[in-house]
Length: 250
Image (cartoon, rainbow, N blue to C red; front, top):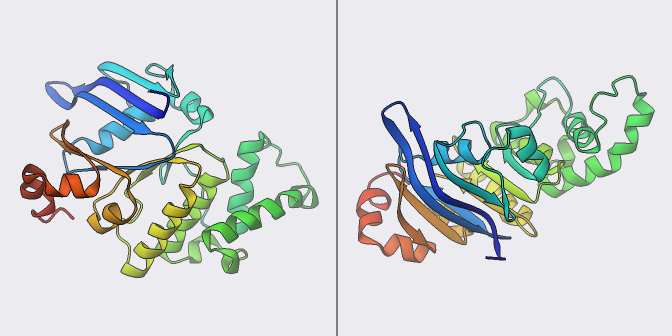
């Protein structure tokens, strides 16, 4: 299907005698926000690890923009534009927020090893770096060390460094985990904004976040799809309501 950015067919992952993902058929439509939900042990993180090639599948196929990427390594996947935030984004606690984004921009431009360049030369990246910080609401923190940011703003910086790579497909692994309510609301608005013109697949436990910003939701149970659809559709499914939405997993 032309509108599908990422698709899995029969995706399976076994660890010894335990099958964490069982014959998963998943289709993520281009330029949508798609959520994977389910309790611990449902297989969500394993699916992310398979898609970004931290694990190789036991069986099945992964297609990205029509290309079979099942056996490609994680570096090749990232070069294709399938980027996992909060996992591989480069943030350095004792560098300024601005310098963190400049380093990420150097990675995209292929100049990450040019540490001999003068500060004046690297300053040419400042304009784009400052625009990125403005986009994510961190302009006021440009000169602050990353270590001095609040937890929520550190996660925002991680999004900024990922966006510096300009990925068309973004995987977010529990982006609001451990955040205060104000930070959750800020990250929720940010994800909605950065999804414009991008495809986002996210694992998220906060059901209000899922309800507010996700176009489509896949509910996993023991490595298999229990239900799929809009929030209204999956929340009305008696199995989902009993197992997750009413069971304290929000």
